[in-house]
Image (cartoon, rainbow, N blue to C red; front, side, top):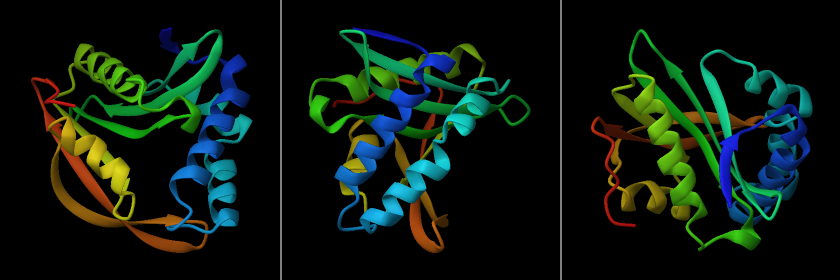
Length: 170
């Protein structure tokens, strides 16, 4: 098992994990078509390739037996010293094995090394497992805003973790 920065060769695996996660996690929140469209809109091969080459963004992948089974997508702003965990997805067949926590720890370590003081994580309000994930590790809920998926608006929670980045429980 390894965590490493994603490469262009990982684009189809990242899309597969995103699609499987959206279909599994959002059946009561999003229609199947909306979940598929959103995953394809956000994780096209071109979009993933673009994210891999951004100077202030990174996708880390978790490999199990040479297969990508999870990823963490982060961005940061040096001026504001803020980081963002845009997504942490683990293939539904590989959950409850500590992969999400390992990806979160790797993302926090990477952002810490970059001198980031505050990390924001966004989760749809209706995504109870996603909200529980950040809460169990000590992220504090600070506010709610709206995000657009497809052509519909959804409430989204923002969680914050301040330096030093030490995870609670979990």
